[in-house]
Amino acid sequence: MAAAADPASPPAVRDVDIYADPTGALPVYRWRQAPKGLATRRQLRERRLRPGGQDPVAVIECRGGKRMAFLYEIAKAKPIRPMTFAKEVALDKAMAARQTCPKCSRRYYHCLPLRTLGSCLECYDGTPAAPDSYMRHSVGQLAAAA
Image 1 (tube, rainbow, N blue to C red):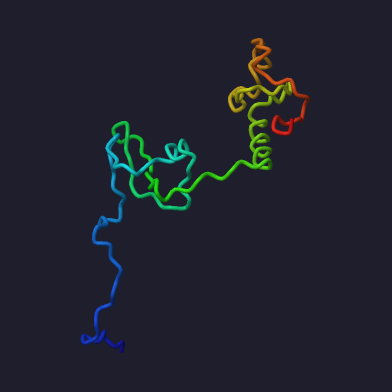
Image 2: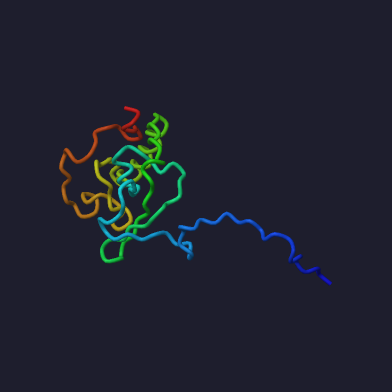
């Protein structure tokens, strides 16, 4: 038979935030009504900051509740990490895959519709490409390494 808890023992001490929402949900603010000192990821990025591992402290809703964004404390944000050459080369390789036509091997300055068309417009339907819309690098050369 299991012993019942001793009624004479003091209750267990729990760390409780008396100001926290009892449901555990984050506070929701409407568009342009968030308090000062909070920012979204994009707003942090404009200030050259990043959340730095902190959890979101609130949510902002816009477009009548159709869009939501997490809000972070600006005071706890950390500066963004500097771009290294290795990161730049890795990003350039990823962009090269999205900007290079698999048929004519031209690398354009914009991303190509490879999922829908499978190639650039010139290869797809003959629409001529403007000469200043693609790079004149040799095939396989990355823009970051140039």
